[in-house]
Length: 402
Image 1: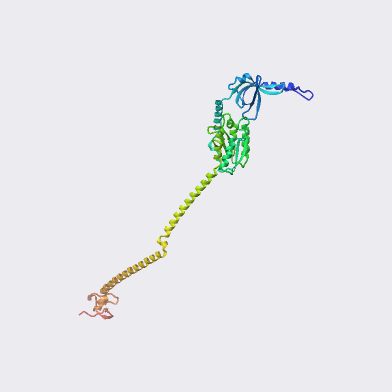
Image 2: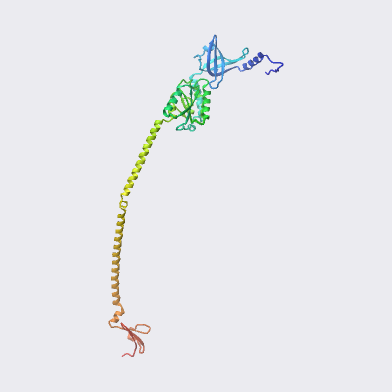
């Protein structure tokens, strides 16, 4: 329904408010979830404020005493509830409120079931995978700390970290760590620290508490904000047995805020002791190596070839002289044996030589062509012959045989 109005024909405020009431009345009844704050009872009516568990949104709720007292256990400030409400717009005051028709407390079992369903959904998306978790720097320059204002968690982290490494620096972002404003403030602080390039690691810390107190650290919006951070995030929520979803998505889980300080900041005493041990180990290794090399060098120097190099030269010279003398003796022996053999051959040659025969008074008859005449029958009268003696020769003419 749209009303036609103008400066000349305006609608009375009551008419406008009545139209608003009609529009709101069309909503009917709905089930809503929230956290109760500012609960007061006056007469037969209970007044309370129902806040959204994540966003900074709230609405007034009116509840009759009968409905309130019929709820077991009775709701108190800070309780999570589900309400069956009807939206009402009060024309006389121009105000809006819900009227509660039924209130059901959100039990621990139901909360755990919701958290398990959310955990399975986020795990299926890969937000808890080990592969996406980043390693923390060995020595962070500046640590972002998100914790409660003036909380014991803040004191534990700061004192233990500075005791381990006095030069460590912190940027502390105090936030609400429970209640309806916790999630929004933690996400805003997380985004602020993540945008700072000087922050090397972020710690989200809170002391122990009930399941309801730790619910903000299992909120889906906060879990996704941590998964989207470029800076490594450490979760230090509650005690060892507390496991909010933030522990699963964080790059490192610490059992307590004190444990977070120990895991993020190295202990200067331990590091100095480690450096001392490594230096001593290095000294021993280098000293052992030098000792082994020195022993090897000393052994090499003690060898005769290096201890007295001239002795080796003398020994080699003696070997050369010995080999030279031996070769001379061998060569002389060989020459003597060759001379004896030559002499024997010469004697044999002389003995078998025709010259030796001629010296004993024999002669050799030859034709002018040099052919030796062996038989007298081969010579005819008138043949010219040469008779060779040991010293000279004569030419003769053959005559008839006598």
